[in-house]
Length: 467
Image (cartoon, rainbow, N blue to C red):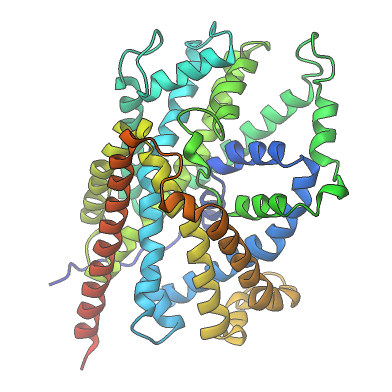
């Protein structure tokens, strides 16, 4: 017999709003965004980014909130059940299963990256990396910490593993205490602190002036000019539009071929520690920066585990305590190859298929089900029901037409540019091939495993409601 549990509820609207913000604000906002903007022309990147935000990011947020609220009214706390409400077809629950599989698979590596931010916050506060004078040396410091190599900075992966355990332990504690006692309480603490730290760091940046007299052109005003100068002549570059559209998705960590070496983490873990060493109170501001990243990341980690937890709670009637033990226990075990095979591309492979391509694919499926199979009239009714302000009617047509077209554009571009190279392991060294295959086997096993769990839960619930 399923265990008798009381359905959890949000204690307040502000708690829900802050939790939604915590889910949306992740490491990609602070680490990946500046790299994408710098690589794609600064201001030339910002216009496509805001266009993508308006025709894809915001509409998807409204649609997902409407789907979630509708699912909650019908006792469907996971996307497999929610999609059955959108489309009365046996395939619907398996399409919805992607919304359980993808977040859990992303959590397998995301929690480890979040642990790095906590570790570097500690290293900043204690001044551990102070004196590492060059960017190459800071790169070696990061690789030593990750266990990619043993060097003069770290002789083992033990420090990284300890911070991973601390981060996972905090996630377990928050998840164990449920929606109001865990997630909502975290959001009410973490999000105001994140905002306060962000404002403090922004004020410090705006008063930096010219940090290095040897490079007078590298000053704050020129930096702001680079970011906000639109450069209209570059707006015809399709690659910039693709990069801007792709950035909308990533609370995750795209382009992680470079994670263990260079790329999306340079700014966060290599370049900025160099800056903190050169400014007054650098240890404090460095600690604040990485604490900001940690708050942004830990709220997203908790969110990533919730779809799987909802499946066990709603589909199998498990208690919160039992579900937390199983889901977080599985997360711990499946994180091990990510941690120990980082240098072999294990994390990279997971991130491309689930954290990059998978997110866009699921968003397209979700949009089509909501706007076309469920119907945009009913969908718009769900979006506007009980709304505190009137939604602009133009978004009715954006969600129905522009959002799916934009998503198709992204998927088609990735299918041409990146998918063939990924499938055939272009650039993967022979010694790394078995590890890449290992990541693929893990993803396939998880996909089929969640599919089986969804089928069992669906059959079980049908037997319960059958007269």
